Figure (cartoon, rainbow, N blue to C red):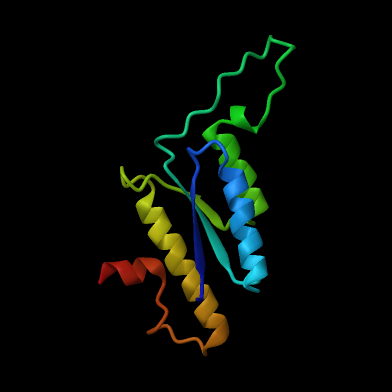
Length: 128
């Protein structure tokens, strides 16, 4: 594959464990070096656990992170190779399509001689 799309259910409480499991399997099958785009789905269903800042007995954990905090965290961890969508509501789907197109285009340009006919900019491609 030119690009692996790692789709993650961000609404699942153990989604980070799921990511670690997939990464371990990719390592075992010697595919950990493949380009990966992390696709965090179900942003419409994500709800952080309630957190009271004044309650000194409860430590703030990842379960309390807002969606914006997760976006910042994963954009940093993946060097921008992640996107947050809601497939059921079609939320952020145009940005998802654009990101996939641009990543595949980038990979192909490094492998094959550049040809603007084969690899137009995303905006040019979608005008047709």
